[in-house]
Length: 81
Picture 1: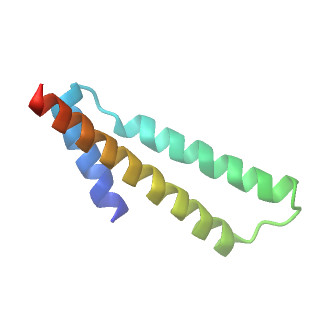
Picture 2: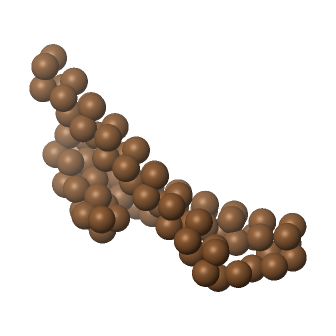
């Protein structure tokens, strides 16, 4: 589902905003992953890859669902204006 949301964010972003928002989304997701891995490694002194990937994938899904919803709201607003 995440690749589908990422591809739709690319096409809708290009159509409605004339910019590509996917690199910004990928950079944000990467920063969240680095921050989460650093926190688990240096603060908790343990990095369990399975738990890290499971938590990170949840963050990615929530972010992509939020971006997809915001693009839908903006496109509906632009349609009715």
